[in-house]
Image (cartoon, rainbow, N blue to C red; front, side):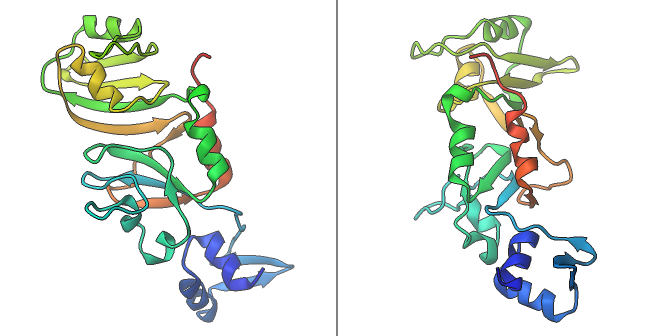
Length: 225
């Protein structure tokens, strides 16, 4: 593997940026290993990114009418065949994984995995204990679809604020679950997938590189089969 590719893959930068890092003297070769600013780099076969998705972007690799999440990455990374793992609605924010690893993405999104996802939500009307009980029992949506049991926690200081933890991913599911209770979700943010939590240091639109080991935290917590 050429040095510039190893630096690009290990540091999550473009080839041209990797060349500049090498020219600047920030890259060292010691005993066959590569270091950037004193930190050893490991080349991943695939890239894994954690993005704090902002509103107004769609989870797609390209769209003729809408801005896509890949536009948040910059030219160097957006050309590395990255794609979003699953999707968040255009107006939903929070944790989104992007990767070049198709097998990993398939494993995360396969419906039989029942990987837990947790959302923070704000609703138009106060939520109640009856809402929590209905959702825990496996709520039926307005079209007759039955959901798996989920957990709704309501903020004791603000009943319009809460957290919903579920292990499936039907279309607009969180919004439809609250709609079935006669309420409306006004703001929705995904804060975790399995054992992987959104990095609190990431502002909306910011992202960071993850190792394969870090990305696989999504498999640490799964629902019942």
